[in-house]
Image 1 (cartoon, rainbow, N blue to C red):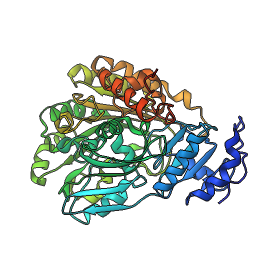
Image 2 (tube, rainbow, N blue to C red):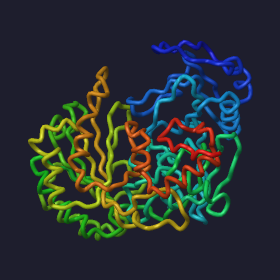
Image 3 (cartoon, rainbow, N blue to C red):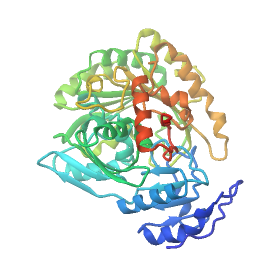
Length: 480
């Protein structure tokens, strides 16, 4: 298939070198589409879930198989071009520029469940909705993201904080057993804790800095049902709910995963009346174990104020999306992240002052995710996912109305992070980096310093030209 028109209508015209004349040859080599700006299907191929990021690559290759990924990577190497990786487009990403080869893997969607070994092998374009449907048919469950639309590989390479049973089983990355990856030189590798263990560990936390993961194998768990759902309260009860949540998490067993969310949403007709332009507080619950025990644990939360809506109950694992109820349509929103070492009474007061009733905060969502439990465990073999001693993950989001300047909506989230500074961990987390965190300082802060230097050394070994740099980049160590 031949590339079409090269006019994408952007202010800066595509910069092309000798490589532009060889796109026809690339198109004949791969099975998937090879698309250039202005060609039919280009915009859809490079689209992502969060509109704060826009990709404008010189060429987008829609890979259908490993051979397509290899061909596109070797094309980029031959012409000295950077490579951007786009799995499903749901997670945070950085914009690919006109001189970039973007490789999309969303067409690679095979899933193989080994019920006897309790494992899954998935390709890079698989989303959690598909994986859960296929695994629960065997009485097994993966560590999922919050939405069926989240891509499994991208989620897991960043660590993977699961709202369903993360405190019971820890980071999703710790349960990976093998990966197939194409490195920046266009070579295929199968990596495990025993075969190329350094590359294996670097990918888990270092993500697309070290290669394009085309397939992944990991453990599944014999879980079929949860005691789970959400408790919604009026924003007027925010203090009572947050203080009870602090007590709740202080003694919660590892089988209990939870989060507390401040919701300050626009008056959209599709929302329940109590969420239309009004502050609400939501506690999200997921208990792995008997429903009777889950009900006992949640009782103090139910009693701390009168719920406006209570959806917590026994549910099949396949209905995990009902816990977070994340939006399914693409949106434009500015994100900020942080990791909290503790949640004290002073932390509660500061958070309420920042986003509680009467605060005037313009943030639409502030999420406090309980960590601890199995998240604090060290993996059986080394990987780059750190900050394991953090007690909570903090996430804020501000929606950007159509046509508005994204930069104008960045300040509230940054101000919240600043106000929470006394309780923030010194380190961030590689899976909790927003597009705005694409600076060397913020990327470095997501890793332990010794781990970061180790990753830079591995980068020099596997990608010395830093071809894979359209990401939260880890630059290679300089070599003589």
